[in-house]
Length: 100
Length: 288
Image (cartoon, rainbow over all chains, first blue to last red; front, side, top):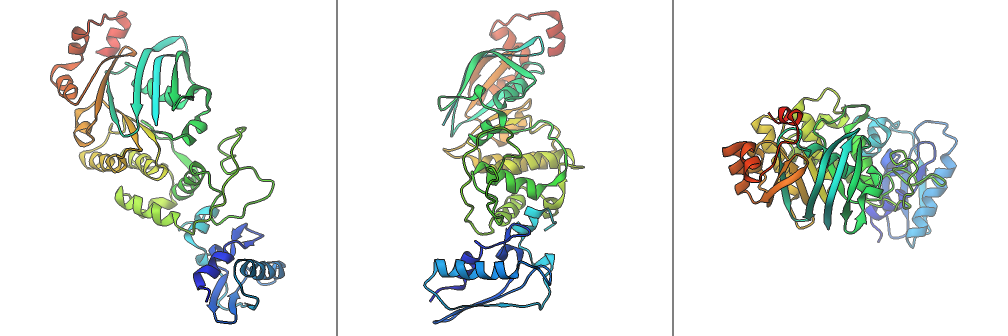
């Protein structure tokens, strides 16, 4: 079975087009769970009504499928808790000039 | 690697400073350069790194056979040369963390971690290396590990973690600036480092920390030129070779015993021992 770490590595290749940083380091990925027959990913967006939801969602599916032998990738957009800057990784915050 | 300096002459404006320096340094070696004020120590460092105020009038500097004098300063840095400044510059607006992250990524030829590789955007470092052809950046595959490495190096150098968020050198004390130089060196892992009077203005505790940083890099892949006025630094960082610079030339070279001889007898001894004539009264005043 594929590991959570491997899925996160695939998701690091998906970038939030608005800020140009990968979705994992931005802190958009809230949950990754791997099962024998499927992978579930809960993710959020930096702001509600972000027009790029569909792009990010399909990029995530494509990236996971490209790296692993999994067809069944279930992505769910969630809004709770709301995203905040504190969810960004330290590297992402350094990159954008926020304090860490 | 080998850094080979042959018959190097350099001047600033119309004043000749270096008058035929010959020096070969291999990785794995620590060279100390001592000499009175005005003998050319800082000029030598600046010329090796390509400071635009100095004009090389003769001689060569080769890094593994490659002509260093033909390279821009940032190319020299990417080839593995590093200098810790005698007077580090304050750079308001750029935090220590952001500066070091980008510097390390550029020196390793990596795209910025966490950031998307933008099509049409030139290689990383283009902002620092204007007009220079740079090799395409390798994708930065490593997970978020830079901050961890940075924090470890800061702990090692006894620098408070809060400095990550401060603007580079802005409002730092003299000792903090020098530690920051050595922190950069630890993270950039150069092949050759020049420490230009890194010990000046340091109290004994800061001196120990700075020495610890330099000694930490000691390896067959690292060489250093340590420029200093004082014996005390060289009791912490023990050099393999000691050179005494006098009036733009290396008057004599030897081992650690030279440091003690110099401390005991002063530069007049060098002058007498090696039959150096004062070149002009003006210069004699500088030497006093």
